[in-house]
Image (cartoon, rainbow, N blue to C red; front, side, top):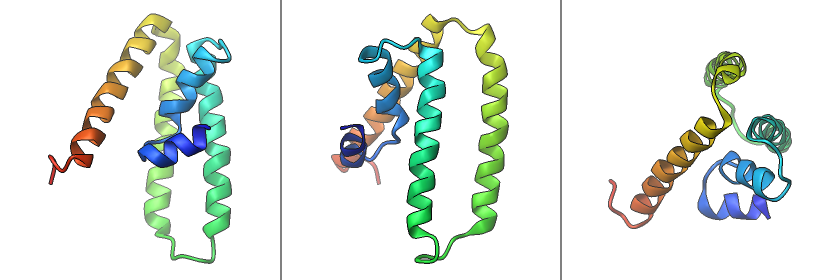
Amino acid sequence: GVGVLTALIGAGGGFVIVPALVLLARLPVRVAVGSSLLIITMNATSGFLGYIGEVPIAWPLVGAFTGVAAVGAMAGARLVRFVSQRHIKQAFAAMILVFGSFFVARGLGLLG
């Protein structure tokens, strides 16, 4: 269900996986975020393995994104200890509203 929904709306799986884990599996937000990252990593790896050798891959770009993401993940793992679950939920909700508004505006042709 999460895969179908993310394919339909064109947003990353974390936007759907985290709320699903919190609401349906009743996981704490911190656990849901970590679990979501593992699920997304496994999903991305399987997709990558399916395309490797079929399409050209811009390895310098992949390396740059991977490096930045790794640094961000390590920083986030350290900083999460200092942020309450309430604030994490509020920030996540705000981020979903911003990105959701962007996708709707783009879908309606309001953005160039």
